[in-house]
Image 1: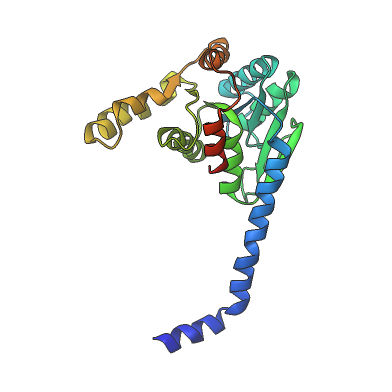
Image 2: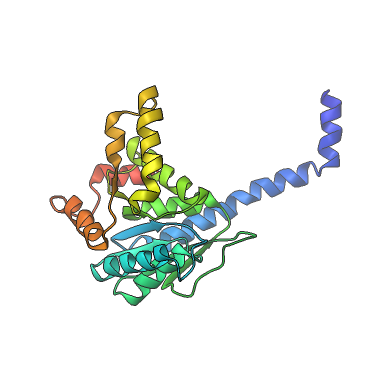
Length: 239
């Protein structure tokens, strides 16, 4: 068996493959460093997530643009995935406001192309390094209707807050009808089975009105300010 594995290793490139895997670490490190350097002094930020497939005529595109512009004019920088659809709407709204419009672009074979409404644009090959930038520098998450990628980002936000790996912050779902089935499933299936606690359902807030979204974020930080505490800063270092 061992001889067979050695033969297979030589056939597949052996040491060359291992060397390539090892050097990949430096590319990943470079993505983290580049992201840290560009975003560390840009605050406070709000990350907006949503579908790449909803075009400029879609009501959710228009609502995202409105929310983003209001956040930008209220003093926030806005982080999006840098691509089309809701991501473009988020960047476009911020671009027309007074805050920074930030795009975290990902190289994909389909769907993703960089939109032109970005003051700061960073490109990633790896979802996980990109995701850290979404989470690390945000004071709130606004989640618009989307697909599997949006659900992945929502789950990441919830997990980090639930486990204390990042500070408690607003996680705002926009689109009460869109999210109703998921929230009901959390309560009917997950809560009843005991895989989440009742308090976990309070981690999200559903808000449809753009002005109320801005107010909810400000209200959350009214008594503490946007800057992380010493303990929160330490936790973010280990995100």
